[in-house]
Length: 534
Image 1 (cartoon, helix red, strand yellow):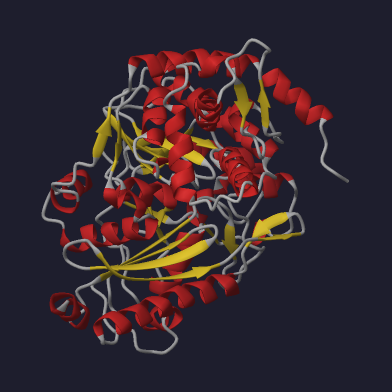
Image 2 (cartoon, rainbow, N blue to C red):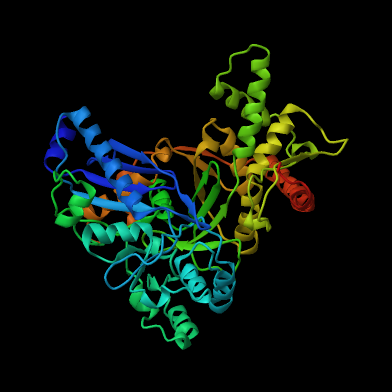
């Protein structure tokens, strides 16, 4: 306690803040990389004129709110005021579109990653670059605005992301970490910078429009993990802490996106490592040894915070339908007057799934609460179907809902592992699916056919991840890579629990997936013919 108090008073602690889609979290870490205080602020995006957005007023209200809550936590726990910081890192949900003119005035409301209004631009740029350019990326939003002939486009002087914007306001520097930058415009892994050939192609494409800017001029500077990206200015310190108690001068690491902080927080930045986050949605990121052989619309290409290429499979649906069924069983039990402990209920039902047939006994389910781009759906219908001779029992029922939670993910991963021949030594799992010990982990190992590790710290999240990146910038020794720093300092001695894939499970999942793929026509029919209540 006294050591932590001393570190706070001496300005040796490191602050990480991440702006997620529903919560802004601030974390303070000490010299042992453990969180010693935290604060958060809940917020929600707004749908305005058909565009998902957050106002910049709300951004600052949320940042200041999470930092004030962290300060209060410090005061309550250690009896001191937080006035000095050793280093700071800012992270936020990736992608989206924030543009400013020469007077630093915002030109249009922030367009977040959640918008799917850029289909034409995404298709045209993917074709032009021969590189998958998802609808979420900043460059796609810019090109769609050009195609739409939007009035603001000629006035653009700077384009950034949410993390890049906050970093700019705190430091005056228009800089960005390479992982976050890889969600704005493609990165060349050989240089760790925006891809020169593609920058040239884009300039040729929009040149005839006669805009007064060039794409190279309006993008931020790209920095690698460990590089210093500026210091907190007097104005920046007052923006974060309007009370005026926070001193200026703390160094900031390059701002990063939630993908990069997730990799850092799970020690998944070295080639052949990966992490998978499974909750309401699910995504897997595998760090590659080399670029992929061809373009796959199912796979997003990003980078680690130190510039290694990463293939990402992102699916909109994971545990929502599974949770809905568990709630139905809760309601059933309560109808008999049984008081239900939800942790016990989840544990019992999840473990029951391990007793089922390897291929779920011929049952089929789809967990599509919303559309799923990997399988080509813009809307979804949760569904459970079976043939009269399928083995319909509780174990198979729970198993099929666990399997289908990863059905779209496996569709994307099979492209990566089977078509592209990518290899992973192990994948680190985090998120709600892994709460019941050993079950989600075993199902994930079956889907991926890769050992899955779950660590105690996997729940710490992105604010902790960006704090680690700030600590790396502050402490790294000459030539010490991010991978070495994380493995030998932060995660030293923390092995986590590793589960190897079981052959019967892997084969069973493959059988299930062929049934799942063939049955997509049933899901398609449901979308076309089953409509919600008016």
